[in-house]
Length: 495
Ligand SMILES: *[C@@H]1O[C@H](CO)[C@@H](O)[C@H](O)[C@H]1NC(C)=O
Ligand SMILES: *[C@@H]1O[C@H](CO)[C@@H](O)[C@H](O)[C@H]1NC(C)=O
Ligand SMILES: *[C@@H]1O[C@H](CO)[C@@H](O)[C@H](O)[C@H]1NC(C)=O
Ligand SMILES: *[C@@H]1O[C@H](CO)[C@@H](O)[C@H](O)[C@H]1NC(C)=O
Image 1 (tube, rainbow, N blue to C red):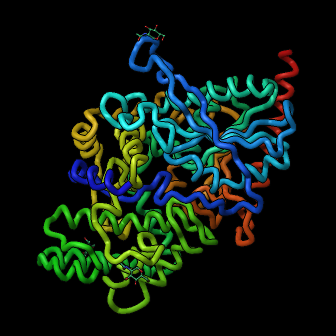
Image 2: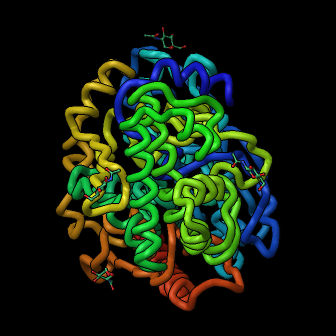
């Protein structure tokens, strides 16, 4: 991982903004199965997948091995439904280990559970080490991914003698977008979708560029307005030290491995710090977790306590960043360019190979032009406009983003013509307001989870769960039961 990071650092250092990654995914690889009361015992398998679904005569004339996880432990063979997780930007084990609700629900429904890995992530690399070269990266599109899942579901149903088993798709974050899209695009295959914390509107270019960091700020402000002020004050001090070019003081106050030496280094530092707040807000679960890194219970509250723990604001800021980057307690200093990568997603691309794939997706179809401005949020002004994005993506990947394509392709503001999708969102999640917050019809249901962070509902039950998520899961289970029934009726009629 870190060799690649170093290499990438050299390449990337240009524009954009920062982070560890936001929409989704993997900071440390964690295989611990948290949130499960019973281990789901998945079997890891590979599926021979078509490289290019849309061109019969290209470099895609072939197949690659796509990883998936499967468990039939609870399945009533040939009859029980299939619960299919539409994998997103990371190692599929990471999602399987943090989505215990799906296996718990499967036990009730006697369902087969499959977690499919997204092409270009984890072990599902179509061209192995060359996957991230140009032009090989070109087969990384949302359309190809949906086709992968459609083909995989269809063939596995054949293989498993499950052709009349209703399929329900599940996903969180970008994975939730994919599950909603599966229902839009392949209603012949998918009876319904649980799209948890899916920012389907903002990523389609229908958001407000200030929304994300405003909502991160609101989480901290809601713990205590003084907390927001302390964060703003710390960034202000950092700005003053930078203006005086007091780089050695910045290094010692913030425990940096090297003193910063340029405006670019300060920009990188601001990005790294802002990203810590982003992750605490997204992963503000009421119990400690190991998803996209290690987090204590209620990290936003812990962050605020740390920000308010003494009069040295910069020391507080360093310790708060340590909640995210130094959760192991073994970091001796913060290395600016290996802990955080700036990319086309200002909420963070994560680290390692997965971050390359996500950067490419943010450079092509998925719009993530979020800014911070120090007015509607508590962070230093860091712009990332469509023009910045174009410039960066042209240099990095030789592509021109298509900001309107997702909206055109996946129904944008006309989602109300779809059916059988749950859009669940937690009000602590900075992604929530990029998604559907109000029900659009009797079968397009918005679920609000008060006190919920990023797709809390997909996690297995926990004693610390707020009542809101218990009732959200109940609503979801009831709707899914209805869809399964409707799909069985459809199968009966067509026989
Ligand atoms: C595609 O694959 C088939 C079977 O392997 C081969 O006969 C054909 O020449 C290939 N076409 C192209 C354009 O590479
Ligand atoms: C990481 O945590 C350990 C244990 O609390 C602490 O001694 C160390 O100074 C921290 N590292 C940084 C860079 O803050
Ligand atoms: C944020 O705004 C305040 C008030 O205008 C200003 O004093 C401070 O320097 C700004 N902080 C940054 C990091 O730009
Ligand atoms: C969920 O909360 C949002 C924001 O507070 C609100 O606008 C929306 O009406 C709520 N939706 C539902 C389905 O209750």
